[in-house]
Amino acid sequence: MPLGVLVAIVAVAFVVLRPIIAPAGPIAATPAPPPCPKVAPVIIGNISVPSGPVAGYCQEQLINAAQIMRAAGTFTTIPRAAEIGVMTAIGESSLRNLTYGDTAGPDSRGLFQQRSNWGPLADRMDPYTSAVLFYRRMINVPGWSTIPPTVVAHTVQRNANPDYYAPFFSRAEKVVAALTADTLPPEPTAVPDATTTPTP
Image 1: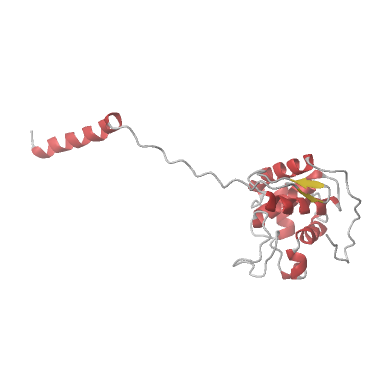
Image 2: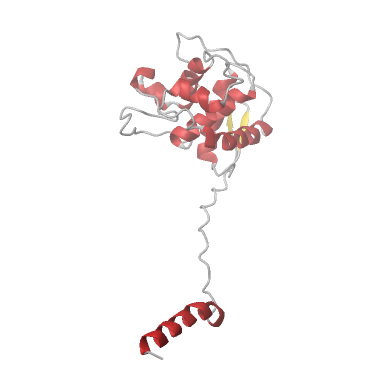
C-alpha cells in the first residue's frame, strides 16, 4: 500500500475515533449577568419599584420605567400606553437616561433619545417630563391603542425602521405587569396642559 494512502487512512481514523477515545472537554458556560443589588423598594408615584431583576432590568432602570408609566397615566388608563412607552425607551436607551446621542442624532438625549426639537435639554433629560413629551405625540397617532406598538413608536420617534421596536415589546409587557402588580393606592393626577411643562 502506498505510504500516502496509509497516512490518509490513519488521519481519517483519528478524526472518526477521537470523540470516542478522548472525551470532550468541559463546555464553557455563558456568563450570567451580574445580580441586581438588593436594595429597598423606591416609590415612584403609586408604584413600588423593587430591586429587580424584572425582565433583566435592575432598580435603576425600573425606576425609569415607573416614571414612564406614571406619565402614561396622566393621559390614559389603557395599559398598552405604558407598554408602548416602556418598549420605546427599551429600544432607544435600554431604560437608561443617556447623556449622549449617536451618529444619526448627535443631539439625542435621555430615555427616548429625543433630539433638540423636542424641547429643552433639561426636559429631555428628566425621565418623567421626557415621557410626557413622548405621550403628547403618541396620543395623536390614529389608532394607537390597536395598531402594532412598533408602528406607534416609529410614528412618534420617526426612526428609519418601523419594525425596530417589535423585539422589545414582550419585555415591556413584563416590566409593566410586574410594576403594576406592586402599585399603591393611586395618587391624584391631572392631564398636563400641552402648553406647559409638567413637574415630576
